[in-house]
Image (tube, rainbow, N blue to C red; front, side):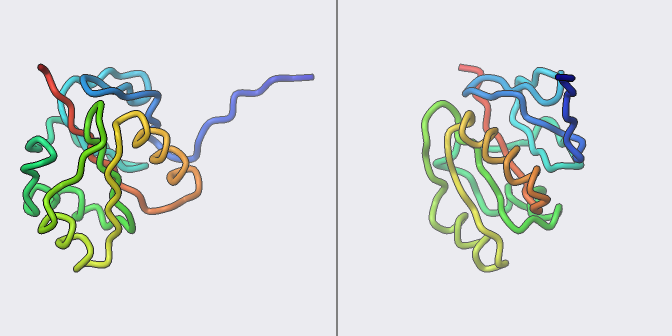
Length: 125
């Protein structure tokens, strides 16, 4: 039997993530970032999840997703209700989960051809 490495038909793959770093393709990121199947935006100026303001989602929303995945670090947490409402008012779903779960969910949705964008909040403390 021949083994063939299957390559995704999208540009960015999350190989793993925790509260302090993430591996996108073969690149280790140490600061909060945004990723879609076709774009990587480094150094996203995101507040800790409890203080995430609706305006901080503008860069994610500009990529016209149908769903936003928020990686909230090592522990699952939720943004303020006004931030969640800003997405819902635009018809965009918003799901918050640990960074590890967000990486796996992003990859599944991207492999299905969904318009997914993920924002990962990384901490240096």
